[in-house]
Image (cartoon, rainbow, N blue to C red; front, side, top):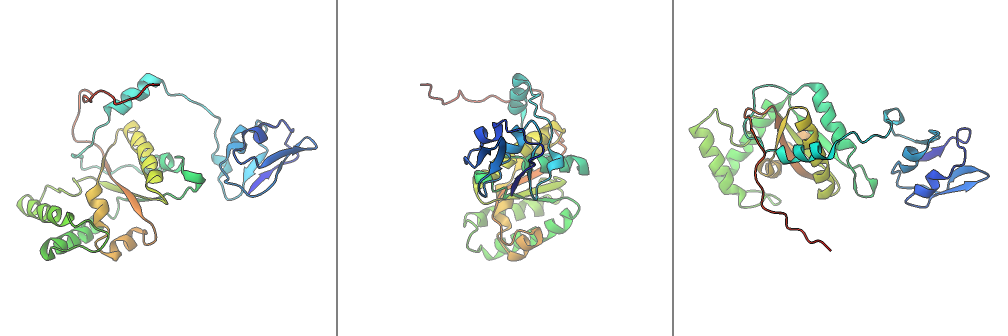
Length: 263
């Protein structure tokens, strides 16, 4: 619920002009909310008097608006990202994990649902790995997977098990990453957008990431896996391995020319 402090409001009309739902009007030189809305926060962000508040939201977390990124530096960071498959045996600090969550939390969502759930596994990663490999071994032996898990994953599981038996120290499913992040949301787009911002934050903190579709499919092998993750009623659309890279790239990688239409 959006509330307007009538003592602070000066009736400037900025909130009414910027309201995407046309839900704010000016009456007697004061802004008035007409009905429940998307709670997008535009009115709070545009108000110079800090007269707007949203119930159940952390208003103290608001900061002065600022764009401090240099375009060329941002582009260079995007060009420099790599999918990391080699990680140092080093845990990610709690404050860095918190920043990753904040980067995902502030990502846009369709209709402002803010439905993303972030499941970060680090402290209990060994327990999770054991559960995962039990199910992978079972699927490889039986040659079957439940509904919802693509049938082609059977051959992948057989391959992962064979590689693990051949080279036990080499973890071909988790890549020895110290942390795993699952992102559930109402729509795949919401989860993907959050993942992109999280990856940018990871890079800014000296971390690396790898999108792991195999592992995201694997949590569908047994209901206990999703239950353990707290995703019983949520669809996980993104899985990311996270950690400090154990490889150093000296330049960006080449790309094909952009397929773009200019009108």
